[in-house]
Image (cartoon, rainbow, N blue to C red; front, side, top):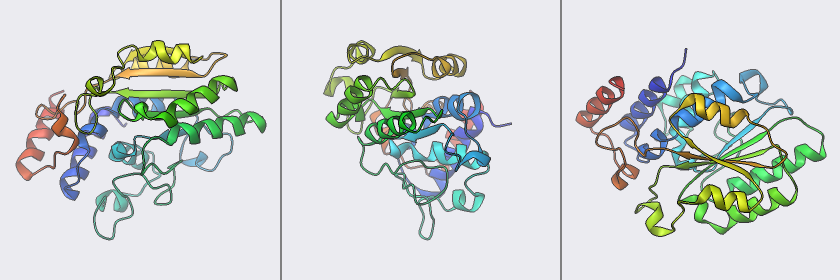
Length: 262
């Protein structure tokens, strides 16, 4: 049985073998992805091409290793591809490219586009009378981009009750604490003002996340998930540097021990 702890260990192992960064961004996502893929979404290996499936877009694509782990544990991404993540000859890049493996609904090399893609998918499902829901995960740095708010406005105008925006609000973007760049402490209020059914939730509480994701409304939904960047690893938690940390052998062993003790 897959657990959030196992996913965190996968993230650390992929980061250690590849010497790639963005681990802090992936570690804050774990419970969000776990609650979506294992507790909520109508999605499985058998439904990868089912037009009625729920679609999950990780718009903050630099958190890719968390999603790769989940799709591997669902039997969709191979062990071989996981082993060669972000290495010469490997198929899986650090930023998500939907052509690299099944189960990836959109490319996310340049942030700020996942919300618009997801709104388009939700509108298409409405027009085709399909039941699948669309979940889009954005970062609290990414949501500062105007393209996200254009998508939010359109989702509300079109009354896309099959669309859910999830904000991984870990408080830190690429170079600073996000609220120092643009103060978003009232983000759920802003999303409510745009016509969403919005709420705040503990982004590391699987039960609370699952309940929020399963909630239905006659409006598009927004979940502001308050998380900790680098969650579970003592030297990464709530640090800007965790956006760029690369694991040496010593740091890898320390990080595994931290996660094991969670």
